[in-house]
Image (cartoon, rainbow over all chains, first blue to last red; front, side, top):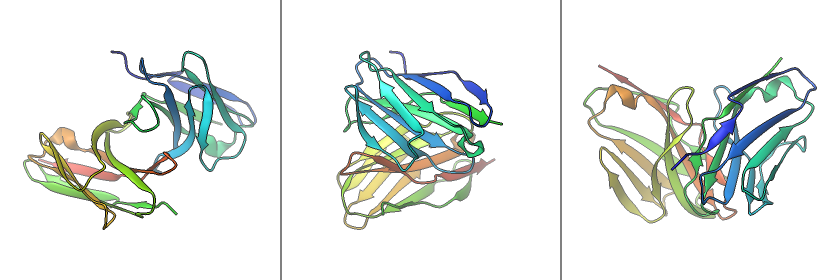
Length: 112
Length: 109
């Protein structure tokens, strides 16, 4: 069974640009979660999608947004990039909001 | 708040036993997870506790006391490959998973 996949693995952008990160969950999982892990910091919860709807949101500004597609894959969009957005962005999936979350390899975003 | 507290760093020697503690605020508690994260890699699931007591899985065990807001991860017969960060995460009623900042464990020969 394939695990959670994310693309791209690395992304380099400049301040003010927009970034789009993609995630495909494990087959059969309907929930997708996004986390930010900045250097030296813990995982910070960004967004939770289930069955195509946003279920919960962390303490991040509105320029962090996303969506979930009918096939349960998900996109995270970050607008008006700032230097401090440089981090590892991890996607996780679970069968539903109550089950264990399994993580993808992450997208490392660097904002110059 | 929903703070998760765990030590920042720990060291141990190969073959030893190490216990990594995690404390959290009990209000709204709905399950606790432990993940292992090697440098530059994604976290991998280790254990899940929702009821009081000890869950054993090979060399790794996890304990939970809901009334005390306390958990620990016990690693036995330490190996060099166990050097990693260990993340404690708590699910609260909102179903949002809150992660601690992680405990970086270094195992020395």
